[in-house]
Amino acid sequence: MTDNRVTRPGRHSYNTRSSRFRAIRTPGGKLVAQKITKTTKGPKCSDCKCSLPGIKHLKRSAYKNLKKRERTVSRAYGGSACGGCVRQRIVRAFLLEEQKAVKKLLAERASKK
Image (cartoon, rainbow, N blue to C red; front, side, top):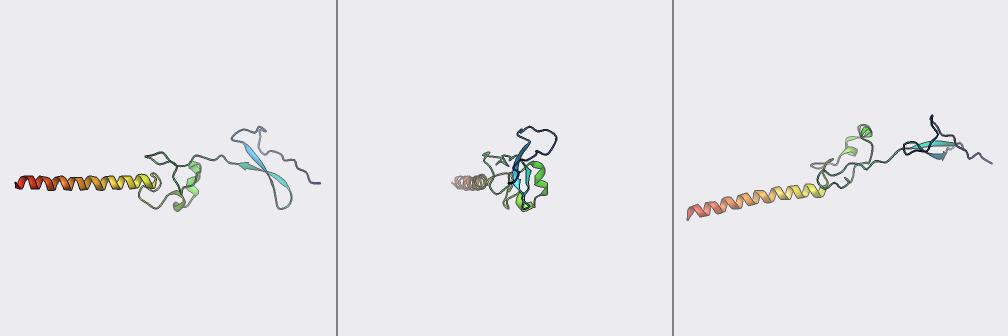
């Protein structure tokens, strides 16, 4: 019969939020304690505050070890705004330009009369 006891590594033995361990059985049949890292909420959209899809939820310090393609999304405002908000910005800018053009055209017609 195998031994199912695990010794907690480290100096203090309390099961706090920052010090959680899981018992993992190695291929050699030994039971060892593996540290469970806390999950983060991940990056949020700057406009609507929703979670950004396509970007991993890691601690700030862990992003430096990732590849650039894992840190951002290849789009304008890639790692800071979601696709819906970017689309909204583009459409708003386009409509403002159209409105300016229409105003200019109406002013020209009014000045001709």
